[in-house]
Length: 485
Image 1: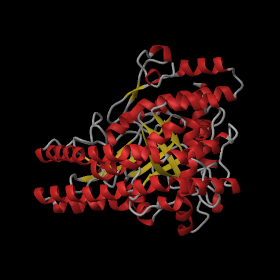
Image 2 (image 1 turned 180 degrees about the horizontal axis):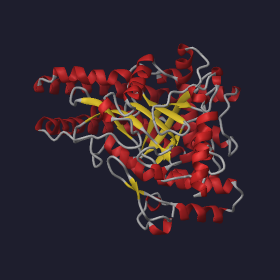
Image 3 (image 1 turned 60 degrees about the horizontal axis):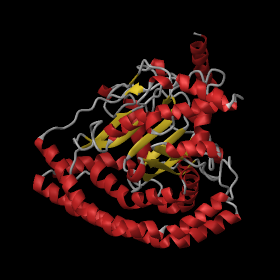
Image 4 (image 1 turned 90 degrees about the vertical axis):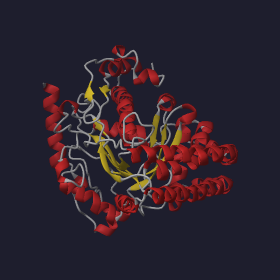
């Protein structure tokens, strides 16, 4: 009872005293420049908030602590579109990968040797890679050495666009779904014309350095190759294809089990530790080795002066199936430009940490939409998860059987399940780090984190916490899958 009371009091303190993200200190144009926003996107997400927070339809309500109700289209046309997508994907992607993958891998090697040499000289525990004269010298050298791989990536992207139009328009003509295509195009509109990645190459360089510190040079070369060659097709043809599917906005959220024990003395403690894990440039070897074993490795570097957002990267998957993803991330704790204003779409956010934008004009992330990451109040449907980390996502998706189910190969349904499995592992590391910072030994901190470990029963709507508490109760757990026990 004492912990619960402290948690409620802490949330009240945050609500009253520390809501800097709601304070307007600059004009709208300046705020959008600092945060990496667009007027159309902000109008869209504010309309969702006004309608309740789940979607543009007021009937979907205001409960962002659970997933939006969503059904799969099992009609013959939807099944036909899914089969067509897979067949045409095989016809194009298999020969392309056979021809381009090995050259892409090899062409990156000289530049990645320079990256690896640079980060080897950086002290472990460094939060940010300072953009000094040496940084810019190394950036220019890497830029020149990476040009052949970059040109190959551009050629691959242009060819993807060509076959996207050929296959997509052919299906549209044969199925006579011109009106549906127009409506689906409008669903994408809020996420067009975000900050262009070509204008943020130094950010990408910083992100690659951070991932190299976490995962090593050869692994980063592999996952960068899959990003350049596969992600645009996954994004535009499989997950967000107006020519084949009826697109709409879908909300899903994942909330970890409670971390109230971490936030008992400081209501922002878990968010501070989470930020350190995700944004630190170069971890100490022990943490870097653990993070490298995860099936999801996010790295959102701190922005350079003059911005509240920066390019970041996510490694997803494992083994030969892993790939890199590129994102735009706005950091709630930054006050560059005399502003900390940051719109929060979730109704159960306790204090914002990250906004992760998946712009449609960013080919190198397979989803399109608005994502947040922060501690949650759990209100109103998951109060037993108060102070857990939440990951609400407003994504452009369809009801296709290829992408809408939790068992689908990709799409919002499958990613909802993916994060239900990963977040308990991340919460374990946050709790372990908290107790290490409190002065406990490695063995003591690990014992406490293991004793508090808890997973959820992944499901549409609400993923309820399992009754089992303690890592020893989970013989087939995510921790075992990640090789951490």
